[in-house]
Image (tube, rainbow, N blue to C red; front, side, top):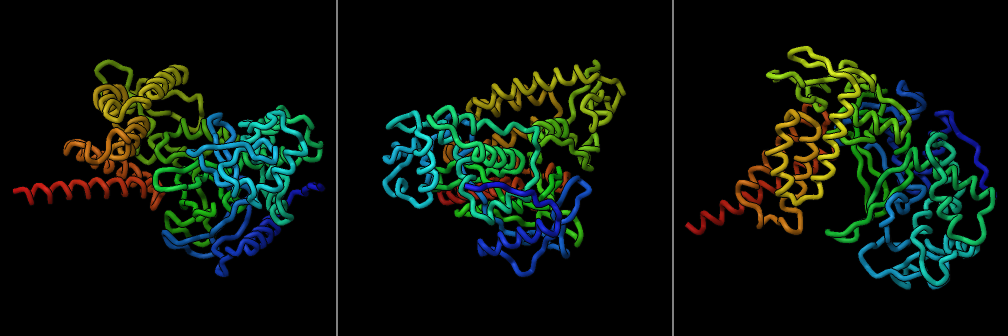
Length: 453
């Protein structure tokens, strides 16, 4: 199969390809709110064609490819419907992939990949192979349509990011090696995924879902900002919906975040450097206090000083930190040691029960870092996610005091998001929903106690 792809880089050409892609998927909106141009953040970007209201839908996008995440060795799922909590058996045709039913085995969506893998002769015989499942993304890339290949040609990628892991998994588990042309195409797909992919989910019912990843051409065009002006979500067909989290002015760049809003500057910039190979220099990253949220703050090392350590120059990863009260400085290596120690403690505690995590937060963590520190926010978010939601800690199991704790933590987190001017972010929506459910449970208990009187 001829899969040679010529790069499409000019903004006007890219926009034309994307419009054709949307029309082909019947999701093109006549009043187009976006256009493609060159970005001050680097490369190309997406810009508003008119003023966009908060919460207004900006675009819908369809994936070029969707498939399993490749880094989790425990990722066992049906290759067609992605169910992961049901019996799996090997496809009877001998492709080496797991399916959950005859319907999935005979699905039209499974035909091309099944035939291709059979031609390579899997080494697993009559069984199914986890490594072949993890290699599905590049295999599916071989069967993209002409339009999908055009969209792939528009995507920028970083050649320095590792791109052969899935392909090596494939080659080690088949007798016939893929052709050089196929390998070249699969490498391009892997590079595009490593740079641009989104994590999406397949929901099976209210309690079960499977984490997947997808490649979205329009979504990939959005540059990162640590205070993004959009939020996104997916529907049951894996389509991506992008809405304005904040009012966006005509001509303003339309951005999204590749990181958590509650991460501090050091963690965000490290993550972006490793995964996207770029150093963010936005207004939030440039401000040592992060708009006075002080998510980075550490306790001053000086005896009897109640001040907080903050980075002198947050855009320099090797900067020293200075106390905002006594002006003592701490060098980069000492800060790294402190942060590594804290991260190790958190890594150990997150596997405890929700009540044990709460006890750790109140008794230990609150003493060793300031209340504004991002680790405090991370643990508070975990607690509000667990309280009332864990199998061993349902709503009925929570005491009235624990309900108050959950409500207070929700309000603490919302206050930080307001300081960061996050707008209608997805994280804010999740926290508001937990707060609503908590208040609803409190009201039910109040009404029941009133009736009993």
